[in-house]
Image (tube, rainbow, N blue to C red):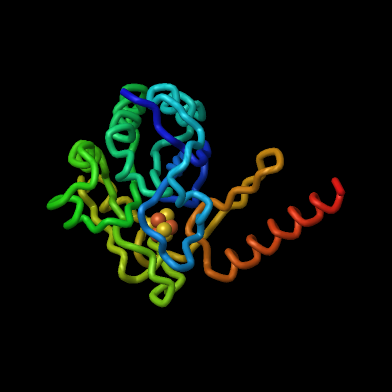
Length: 210
Ligand code: SF4
């Protein structure tokens, strides 16, 4: 199996699905939604290259992690590698899977954009599908805008008490060296504050080196 092209990953968060989870954001997305919160991860350029089995071990190094979340970028463009990743994780221990996609489930089933899509869909417990539409961002739930749908493909997380569509939003800011990562689907105002803070730090850093 080939390597995944990963924009970022994080071990142990409660901001992207039920329980404690690890997250993979893949690099590259064919869509250009206005207001996308991760525009740096849209270009299809090389980022971190990592084998699925190695990444699975890394993501489950925290024994409290009970699930993975795939986001991006567009996970379905790397579906075969992500299917291998979740299978490798499940060989380590039982792990739930939440996956985001800009494609609708109907599109994925009728015209899969890559050959690995059916394999990945077979592994997904919850798919949150559809493009982000800023005008329909109601500030609720794990989906970014009201047009996006929550599909309980396996039913495994349907009764876990986690309201994917209507819950109050939460987000975490993780700092790793000089990089800051906003984890979660934030209330719109938080994203604005985060972007301004990152710009401020970058400007200060440029000024400091000049
Ligand atoms: S599908 Fe997601 S990652 Fe791609 S442009 Fe839209 S919001 Fe951004």
